[in-house]
Length: 460
Image (cartoon, rainbow, N blue to C red):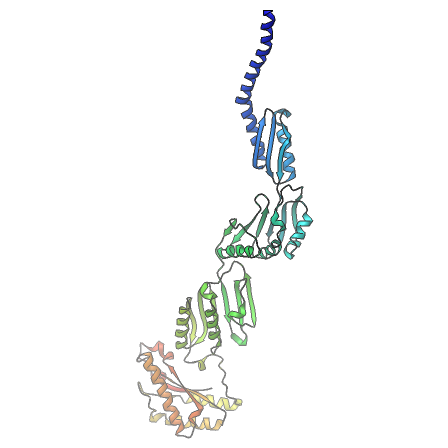
């Protein structure tokens, strides 16, 4: 009886002892190795938010992957561990496919990629002119366990069209993983803010952290009104309306989303100033590079000083390539308003050229030796008849300061008008101006000469 009892006890205890040591070996050696192998498979298959556990050779899984093929591949790879001894428990197999769509524009080509339940339905929801011209796609038609509700958003299609129309290669991704809308590509800081604001206006929240911030392209505009034709060319921001800056006959401006106007150039006050600048007499131009404004064309010394000062007050950096003349009546291509036949016009111009009135230094009195010229001018003007008007301007040499020379020039012109009036010419025919010492500026070191101290007439 005792022998039977001992044998029965052995039959019970020995297997338990064996099982104990086997379990200890499993927990200490086999299980960690198996966990490491399962983790390696999960990592290689891109399982997101993975949760898994192991009970002996049974593996329980949950998490998300990008497509259905990844789900099947994951299960198969785990089932192959240990020569097929490991198995994924179907009852605890909760790996989900998450929906996403990646909309990417490269050059003029548009590519749709991602995992969607019905590609045609996706295109229908995003039915815009930008998205219907898809040149390639890699859309997986899979069962979606978790859809991206943003794909159903009513404002997505319109926002997508506007966003993709921006210059440069760019894209966005809508994902069900976190129901997010993420943009990527190059953008200026201003463009980044604009994209976020446009999404907000459409009722969307966009993640702009994927943008690579680039410096804006400098604005380069050329404006001119030469030859009776006004022309604007260069590059400007995409929302730039050229008529607000310059009413040109020919506009060759490239709209560039990466271009941004310097704040001073963007001000309405600058546009208003440009209008006054081109409204002045003479054919002239302007070159704008970022906040540097270079003026070109004819001007007087007084106008140049005035314009440069006004531009500085507007916050831009002005430079001058203006060619200076004594007055607007000396500008190249100046056309008088007086209606004369060619012969009469030529006779007057010849008389003006031959009969410039010269003065002594510092004096505005008409000299006796200049009276013959007064007679010749009076005869030519009288012969021209009615309907002719004239500009009469005085010059000064470089002696003295600018204001003294300005006043002296005007006095000399007035003296000649009075001398002509004594010969019977109406003073109403003359507009008195001061040509100053502009032409004598280069003679400052020599003190000037008689040819700088004169009065000349021009047709008005």
